[in-house]
Length: 355
Ligand code: NAD
Ligand code: DAU
Image 1: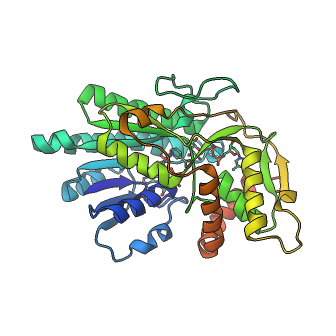
Image 2 (image 1 turned 90 degrees about the vertical axis):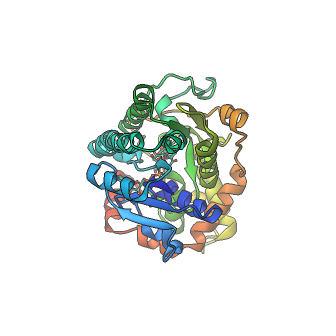
Image 3 (image 1 turned 180 degrees about the horizontal axis):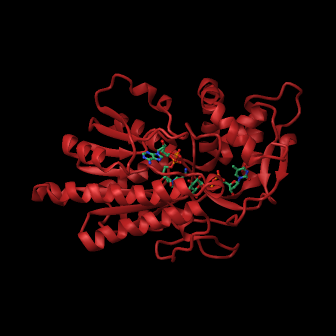
């Protein structure tokens, strides 16, 4: 079986669903169920013995030791993290605890378990660490996209904490021989994306008749990847990635934020027109920029294609249409995640703005 951390979050839950749709290998899923963890994402697995969910912290050494000893996984896939840049600016401590201390404790638990495996199982074991392109810092317009050789220059508390975790993973390989691989992926979007992040926030605000808050001039550039393509990249790296290597994962879809927002508005105009017949783009409002906002990310995903034969299946046009449709088809999921805690976050983050 495989051991997944953070499998009730956005990418982790998509990964668990895809994993069990494509194989019968069981998955144990350890997730703290922070504000971002949501068992509703996994409702279709209720009663499925191949999915074992455990609520707990990746930094709880006694719990992780016990789970590893009991379930004897052949691999660990580490998704668990605090993931939202704006939250890291308001309160960095949780990011240090989960992303750095938590990853350290998980590595130590996994090292102890792996050291005691029989030789053949030890050789086949993998620890896959899921990371981000944000560790590389920011690019100007004409810089080449991030290659795996680009030095780390993280700029936010979130990206600094992810960079630290990547360094720990690398060191556990070089020092202790732990069989690790790391993926650094660009911005994901798709089903079950928590509506604090750009694309789902724009969809739910648009439908609720609220302002669509664009930071600064809206010309910051991100590369966008449909979440199921990220899942297939992780499966491929788990299967064939070279030990100790890192793989950049991206969608070849660099777009300024304002273009993303207009695309979402146009799809909603087509699929769920406003009652007054006016375009959703009327709801766009420019708000105060994110402090230290990275201007541009771009991923050079040639290594994973060349060495492992992976390419994304979706274009941005196909992926964003599926995503908008998913939010239209799942109003209950949206209503349930917009709990009191969610409303408090929105009030704090967009305080004084028209959002
Ligand atoms: P998310 O915030 O939606 O989910 C994170 C999950 O981790 C939640 O289910 C949460 O409950 C769980 N978690 C948090 N702290 C925990 C702890 N201490 N112990 C156990 N579980 C804990 O995040 P996501 O967007 O799904 O991102 C998953 C991973 O992928 C993260 O490591 C993130 O850095 C990375 N990543 C995300 C993106 C993206 O665009 N979302 C892109 C590249 C990489
Ligand atoms: O690049 C990968 C990263 O992508 C992941 O590592 C992170 O976990 C993930 O959250 C995401 O980070 P971003 O900061 O790029 O995502 P976010 O959706 O928060 O913002 C995307 C862009 O949109 C960014 O330039 C900020 C802008 N933005 C965001 C929000 C929430 C707005 O203009 N308005 C908003 O209200």
